[in-house]
Length: 406
Image (tube, rainbow, N blue to C red):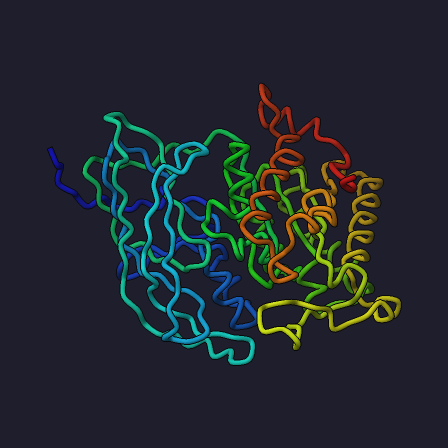
C-alpha cells in the first residue's frame, strides 16, 4: 500500500560537509566558506565555485521507501539558453550508491573568462525524487548534492519519519584543492575523487576545494584553521602554475604561511601536502595554460617556457621539489605530523599514456575514480588501518607517504 508523503523539517545537524549553514526565507543554504570569508572572495568566478556543493550531503536515518527533496539550485553557465544536462542527486548507504535522481538545471550564474558578468538568470525550483529505498527497517543514508551547483534546501518529504543520522565515529577528513579536487569533469558527486576516496575508506569528508582557486588564499587557511578535522590534506600547485600567479620566491613563503595559519588551530593534526598530478603542458614549462588556438575542442597548452622557469617562474616539477623540501625542513624543526604525498603516485606519466586527460588539463571520470582509489589506499589507509582507532593510526603514520610512482 502506498504511504502518503509528509514534510520533514530539515535540521542543520543533517547537513554534513559544510562550514556554515545560512537560513533564508525559504530554506537552508550550506556554505563551504563562512560569511566573513565569502566577503573576501576576490573574483566572480570564485563567488560561484566556492558556493557550489562539492562534498555536501544530508545524513538521514529513515525507513522511508520514497524521499523527495525540493531545491533551488544555481549552476555556472556561459549563457542563459544553451541546454545543459540535469543535475545528479545521489543517495548512498555505506559506500554504495542506492538511488539517484536527475533534476533539471535551475538558475544560471552567467560567466566565462571572456565575459565574466556574474549575472544570475533565474530558473525554476526542482525536486529530486528517490523511490525504492525502503527495506522495512531504518537505515542510515547520505543524500549527496551535485558538486557543480549551489543548492538551497527548501523542503524534504518522505513516506516515513526521518531523523538526522548519528555523527560518524570515524576519521574527519578535510581536503583543500583545485578544480581537480572539486570534481570538474566527473559525472556525479560520488564520482569526484575525494568522495570516491572517502566512501572507499569510510571517513567523513569536508571538501574545501574550489575550481581555479587553490591559490594559498589566507581566508582559506583561516577557514581550515577553524574547522574540525582529524586529518587535513592540501593539494597545491596546479592553479598557481596554470594561472601564472606566483614566482618561486613568493611560492615558498606563501606555502609556509598557509601552513603556519593552519597550525595555529591544528597544532597536532596530521597534515598531508599533496603535490600536483601529471599535467604535460606545464611539467617543465611555466604557465599560464591557455587554449590551443589550432584546436576547436578544449585543449590546454602552456604559454610559458622552460626559459621562464629558469628565470623564476613555476612549473609543476619546481612546485613538487619545493613542496617536498618545505615538508622536510619543517619536519626537521619538529613538525612530525606533516607529511608529503607525491601527486605522481596518484596519476603519473605512465597513467597519462593509458588514460589521457581529455582536455590536457583536467581528469575525466575514469581518472577521477583512479585518483580517489589510490588516495584511499596510499593516504587514508595509512591513517585509518583496519582494527585501530583513528588516534592510534595517526600516531603511527609514516613520514613520507609517497615520493613517486615507479
